Length: 452
Image (cartoon, rainbow, N blue to C red; front, top):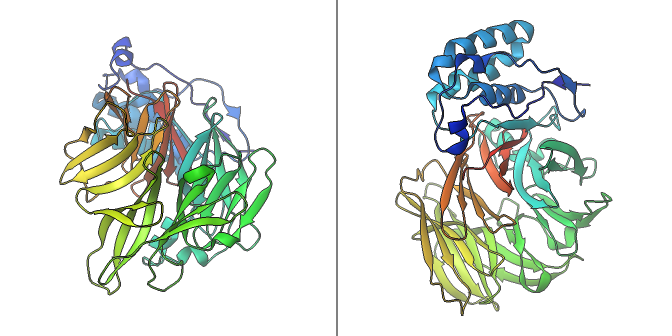
């Protein structure tokens, strides 16, 4: 059985740190002393990874430059005992000095699952929260893409397990994943969504979508929906929406959006197209229940190499008629809140804005809430938006900056650690005063105190 050190909620900072989580409090050098708590066993699918050790030292050392010498001493001591962990310690201590303010809380927990495969590097993808569990996809798409010179089909070169991760938000521990594939399957799980029937639906892009009963583990294939399904969202009349990002093959076909039921029947399909030499590849989808309209964000891919990729959002009515096509501002993600308001994360020049459109008949007008006036659009992206039980909206960016927007418009921003330079954050969710996010850097979940 693997071992790692327990990460407790140590209070290395003075009380002022708790009162104002937006400021990094200065800590004494004693914060970098090695933990003195006893070691304990954990479940066999969680390993003693460098990320976990990095989490311990992020928690204890923080970002006080005065603690660097003590951190170095800890790194040397651990390096003598376990040489493979020295880099993680350097990330926790030395790396912190290079990026002050990139962690918003002391109570950092980083949990990484045992690698699903020796042949490919899987990581955590889109997630959804239900019943105190964060469910999330696991895929090797990005690592395979990088390893094979940008080939988007490289994930098909090696078979591997098809899993949906499960993270207990109360204990902040990984549970055994849900196995949803068959021997020989190759395409990892991309998105997951809980249906009204209690089944967990998932997409795998290159292979068939499916659903799994999260209680019994029973899996059903939805091959009738076809390939190339990408992101999921609630649809009209109890259905689910899925974006079809092209054909899933080597052709240059336009994509579409489908609405389907739990038996795998397509009840509606909305094809998308652009004039000229651009192919429409749909991504995020949302159904506006009040206006009976479909919102879709999409990449506009040139059919001929060399041309620039563009981005657009499409608004269609129930019958598929195009109502709007929006390229400026760039709408990076769209979803609907439980009260019927439509939420759009928009980027215009260097400004990231959350635009809230209430349902018809509501007295409040459209609200535009500035999230970031200096948004680095060339390097960052809004990957997901989730609504918490208390109505707060969580806006997750690749970089680990997470904006939490309350119903009254008040904003707080968390900064999750960039432990892996190639890692990106997918889905962050709230449980009380804790914020946890799926992190595409191995199969990892990161948790911190939510800023207030």
